[in-house]
Length: 421
Ligand code: EPU
Image 1: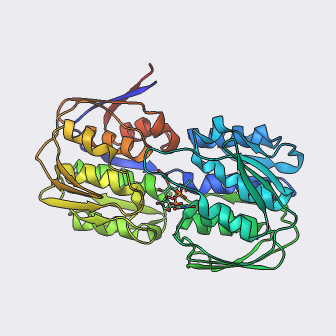
Image 2: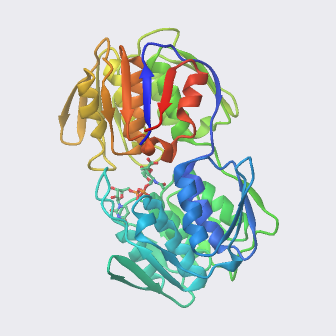
Image 3: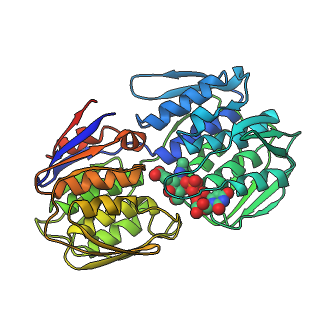
């Protein structure tokens, strides 16, 4: 397994380009299963989770052509297996996103249930209950969800809890259902909106994306008709580099971003003392060499502060001036980075789902590792400001969600290198 070795103490300066959003690309690739004709998807990030999704679709008989710019043409007219094996699903839970499209278009699916996950139990009961309400017959046999259905029937679905991939799966199923489906308490995340825009561009009739009530009028079929769709920029990658710059007292400009979907994160960075200028598709952050002030956050579904940025803010608070209180309300076990940061000298106390962090003037480099994507990224950030060398192990987690992280950080002046194992 590769490692990242970081020599701390550099101030980040310069410009980088942000990649397409992982969490929009994954459902949109799954949604291409719904199209009768080939579709081209652009601004796809070069990530391990994308390769896994391509393997998953390829295993079903879908034809995929990738060009050198990571535009992917997906042709699902030749699909002949409706199967998502455990070996794939266990490495990427988002594989569950093929369930809705397979059931809706082909009336059958055999998809492994995702197992446990490092950040919480993460059940998919709401995905399954919704599909059942639409008329699918589902059973769980030997760890697999077996689904059979005729044409799904539109209905009213009230989700007990806000779920991002649950909303996406049910929305994808509903676009081909007979009649109207209303999804209440839907997720508002920009990635859900991007998926709805993609589906509508193929002929779906979805209204209300970005609000908590989705109204979906089912259509007979979807067709891409020469459509090329570009994935929206990754707001979590954007936020991660902004926090990195703020922690190091730096000055960076991030291009190909969507500032309008980052309000909660930008507000906290301004509170920490950053000077932030936004243009239509760029964000410039200048910390003017200052040490950040601690900020308190409470994670919750969009538009509140994203759980996917909590670990990075913890890293910033670890070296900030003052006490920051971070409460995690989305996943029950998303503080794996805390113990590793403590090994680097951070002063963090846990009280159930809250981390109370008293900033220290400096961290010290150490060998560290984490068992999920955002926690791993936060350890890289901690390494940037630590005295001496930090070795981050198990970085395949980072490769799942950050395109060329060491190259982008090096472009901003970080001293970081990848060591193959
Ligand atoms: N939940 C249920 N039942 C369900 C579905 C969800 O109880 O059927 C609960 C979950 O256990 C959790 C809460 O609802 O406590 C919210 O989970 P959600 O379903 O929204 O999460 P997800 O769809 O599995 C997506 C992102 C995550 C991100 C969360 C929250 C993708 C592929 N993944 O996961 O991204 O943290 O939404 O915003 O979109 C990441 O990129 O690092 C990542 C983990």
